[in-house]
Length: 229
Image (cartoon, rainbow, N blue to C red; front, side, top):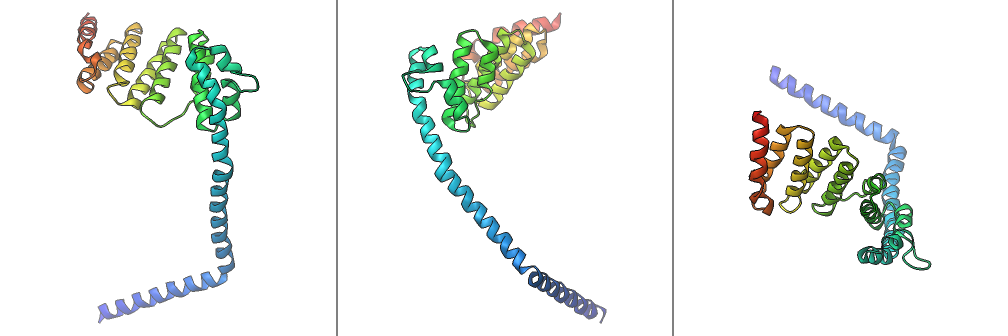
């Protein structure tokens, strides 16, 4: 009997909840409809913005980058940075105007590489940090180059951080071993031999198919000897 009453009571509660829901919908039906329409309009607006603004802007940026990229590949750094031809935009202008596009980000990377080659490490860092990409080769290589810039500036702690970040981001036997070796060398310079040993051993244990793994044993032995002193 008690069970039946409980079931009856539960049914009553369910009906009450449904009834309240219906009253809520009736009361706020216009508001709900406007909210749904608002979401739809927003979605359409975003799609139109991407289709009519973002994509054409990206295409235009890529076209502008073409000449500057050619000069960069040819080693004509000044022309690539400033103006590869009459009426054409240089890397710096492209990076500034089209910073939200893939071409704009790539222009930042090219400019950073040029500044590094010219020994302008602060400027190189500024440009290289603007490059963003989610892949395992170019992006980690750019991060590694930021580490190289910090080495040249004598900022070894920052350099080690970027080398380790690059190794982790790449997570492959092509890029990661060189990043770990650079990190290890910096850690040795800082006297942080335990961290250097860990970096070297990661090459040996995780990236044993990489060419660097064949010569890393000497570095491991050297650091282990320093840790025993």
